[in-house]
Image (tube, rainbow, N blue to C red; front, side, top):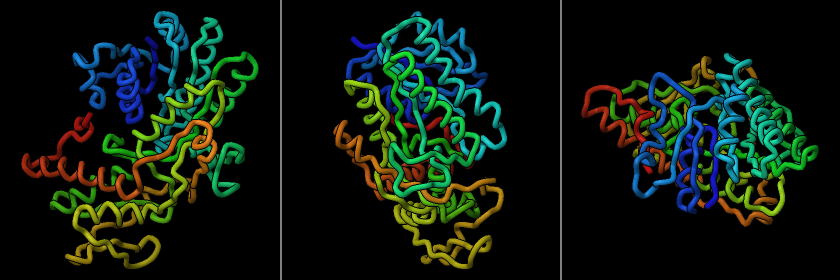
Length: 357
C-alpha cells in the first residue's frame, strides 16, 4: 500500500487530494502547521472516520528543514505532494520575506531532505499560473517564459526551477504541475471567487450592503479543485518526471464570474459607470450590489491568464469536467446555504468552519 505525504493538507487542494488518495487505497500523512486556533476544518471529516483508517496528520513546518527531514525519514513516503505555501497573491506584497521562505525555500528543504536521505520518493511541486505574470504569450504552456508580477509568483518560479534542477542534477523523480486558477466551495474566503459568492449571498439576504471588488477586468482560467487534484495525482503516476500545465483553456473576467454567480442567486447584474465609479446593479431590484474599491487592487496587476493543457491531455489523459458555469453554481449555492444559516442565527458564521466532503 502506497504512502503519501501532503504539505498544505488543511487547504482546499490538500483536502480534495487526501480524499482522492484515500479512495485509491493510500496511507495519507498530512503535514499540519501548529496553530493556536483550529485550521483543520476541511479535513475534519477524515479524522477518526472508520471509512478512512489510514489518514494521519503530523505537526511540521516548511520553514524547518530538520523537522521536515525527520518526518520524511520516519514516514518514508512513496509520494510527496508539496501543496503548502503562503498562497495569497495580494498578501505576498505585505509579507514578501515570509512568502519567499515558505513558498520558495520550503520546496528546496523538501528536495534536499529527499536527496540527503537517498529516498526513491516521487516529488510533486505545486507551481502556479502566477509565474507567467504579465504574459509573454497567449495561451501559456510549458515553454512560455515566466514573467512574475508578485512576490508569490517569483517564489513559485524559484520552487519550479529548483525542482527541475534537482531532477536533472540528482536524478530525483521531481515534477511540476503549473496549475491555473482552481476554485471550489472550500476556497479560502479572501480569494476573489469565494469573496464574490459569499458577498453576493449576503447582499441577497440583506446581511451586507454591497460587495466591494478590485480589478473587474482581470481575466482568469478557472476550473474546479477536485478536477485539478486528479491531474496532480496523474503527474506522479507518469513513467518519468516532467512538467505539465493544468488548465481549462477558457478565460473569463472577474466581472463575468460575478454575473454567472449572481444568476444562481436569482440576481441579474448590469453594469453602470466606468473605472473606479463602475457599479454592478441588480436589474430586478435596482439595488447597487457591486462597487469598485482601490484597496483591492494589487500593486502590480496580472491582467490575463489562459492555459494550454494540451500536453497533460495527450500524455496523462486528463480532462477538466466542471465547467465555468457549473463552478459558479456550486460555489454560489453552497454559500447561499451558509448565509441562510447566518440569517437564522442573526450573526456571521465562522465561514471557514463549513465544508463538505
